[in-house]
Length: 112
Length: 119
Image (cartoon, rainbow over all chains, first blue to last red):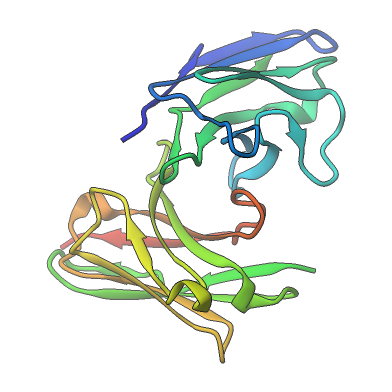
């Protein structure tokens, strides 16, 4: 199975500042036949289901604010939340869908 | 509006079986693979498995922890997907989510249904 490891486990950021979450895969997620990395990011707020933020490593989901951005390729990926807002307090998960579907352990983002 | 609504969660005793349902609406149900994902309280997300669409013979695939004990199926005539859970154990206690894949990964999720396994 492909193992996804996120860092850090938790993050405290001031309003308006940048939050950066890293995700490492135990397997290369880049599929050369379509030039896509099979990596997604989800946001989960308390009591709610996960929400798709980013797919193909860097494509924002429908209605996702542009302060959320994804980058990286292969085995190393990053989710950046620029200009952190109070409503961004949540747990963030990376997920690979290259072979099956597995999630990282999650990163909790809080306001300083 | 795309909606997925889970139902069937309850308190069950260890060793029993339980069937969860997922009702889809607002999209062409038969075009989407359907997945189940679970989340124990305060824990992360765990993919259980999926059922593919008719052109793929409704093939199923499961995570290693679930093969042989959990069974996923679908009924496109009713826009429903199902998760049959056999021989449940206390560590199966979790919120169970239904989600779909169409073009990439899980773009819509239900709100989940709670399964509690306890004697």
